[in-house]
Amino acid sequence: MSQEIQKAGSDDSSQKGRALVLLREMLLRGDFQPGERLSELSLVARLQVSRTPIRLALETLAHEGFLEASASGGFFARKFTIEDVWDAIEVRGVLEGTAARLAAERLVDGSELDGLRQFYAEMTSISELTLVTLSRFLELNDGFHAELLRLANSPMLSWTVERVTSLPFGAPGSLVFTHSQLPAAVTMLKIGQDQHQSIIEAIRNRQGTRAENIAREHARLSRRTIELALSDTLIQNCTPWGALIRA
Amino acid sequence: MSQEIQKAGSDDSSQKGRALVLLREMLLRGDFQPGERLSELSLVARLQVSRTPIRLALETLAHEGFLEASASGGFFARKFTIEDVWDAIEVRGVLEGTAARLAAERLVDGSELDGLRQFYAEMTSISELTLVTLSRFLELNDGFHAELLRLANSPMLSWTVERVTSLPFGAPGSLVFTHSQLPAAVTMLKIGQDQHQSIIEAIRNRQGTRAENIAREHARLSRRTIELALSDTLIQNCTPWGALIRA
DNA sequence: TGATGACTCTATGCATGCAAATTTAGGGGG
DNA sequence: CCCCCTAAATTTGCATGCATAGAGTCATCA
Image (cartoon, rainbow over all chains, first blue to last red; front, side, top):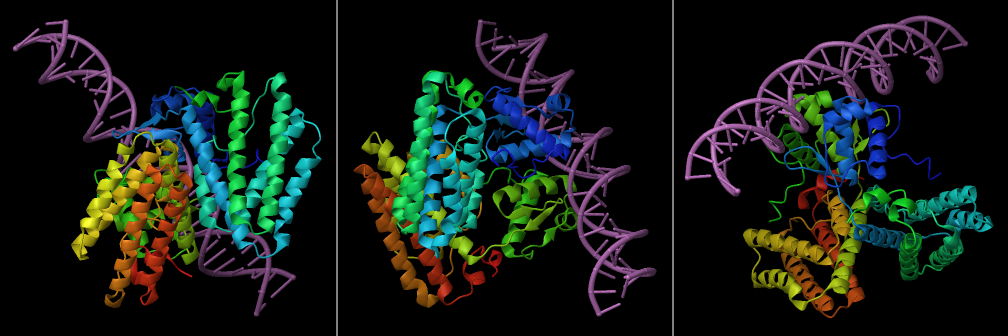
């Protein structure tokens, strides 16, 4: 599921979509130095797409937060620090906390929680961690969080979260662990599962503040997870977006 | 100050900037029905600008949340309900609460609060409410909130707030009151000033949670203010964005 | 040697033509 | 009377040419 989520206009059927996907890949791969100017003409050669769709894609990437518009026209690669990553996670936690609180406040019938319970159950049923089960686990995790947002019943909140998560930092994404870190990583996932369970319980009991606080702490768990992955690897090697972080 | 804030790319010096400003005006004025398709060609005639800058402006407005992209190309006027307005205010409150909390948690020296204190003092010095002093008051209010965000020292949070406030709902903006409502409106502003004072105090004492909660409630005050203005006027007549709300 | 000026060259903003796709209107068939 | 299918007209997506503004460079002068 997480792999199939397509951001708007990113379908491969149009020139703009192709340019967008390719540019995102290049940015995540670190093909551009932070602060480097992305000139349209040079991209025409590299992407085999004409200037018009490239311009549209650049505009979109600027709105998504990857690029910064220069006052004199054109775009620069935005620079990110590890602090930005932590703050993005904090913001995401705040918004998911709000989703959990609103879900608790606006719940009308306990059966609305069945969706969350199902994601939780399926995640629990995954006993051991392999490459394929991890990917499945992350899919279910995405599903859980999407369902939580749905229960908040707030289009404005959903829209805000969409905007914020256009940058890849907040999302759990996939992390690469060294062999020795695996046990600790599994522990993290189990703690996360316990938090999922507690969030469901809090919403069921209409404990809005409790739900909010757990969801916040749940986001901070992904910070700890990243820190763990970072502890004996370079950031470039343990996250898909590592190349974006300089400084 | 609030009048001089220019959203990126909205300067009048370019065709795209002109189109953007004009289209925003038209949308706020309610020139388009919710769900109506905005065809580029018809806009060429109405705005006296060619298709290229119009297309860019439409793209930008979609990212700002005014328009919705159709799957088959083109854009529709998005429809908003009064619930969306309340939720936008709630989200803004959550984010400003986060700014207040981070400001408290990250404060290193009490003198950093001087900016906030100055805005507060100037707002207090305004004794009576006229059209000109109200406008000045709102400017100072904007300044206070911008300074609060600055103190949070979080580029990611600032960026998020910018994204969310591209829609005009969250911001205090200007409201029109009937004569009989004026005393109540003045009371609201005084309560808001007291909250400003309390936020400063909470940050000074490094009471993060307290600062966060007051800032949230402060946002809800603007909901009450809108409800007051709404109480014996149509929404179209008391807010600048009233024409956007249907249903 | 440093700064300032002019000049060149490149990059972007904009306009417009063309083709493909979507929507819509109309007619024919069930 | 309703549905479907076809065809035309509108609309968007894309490519490209042109003009202007900006960046870079080199030379001259203080």
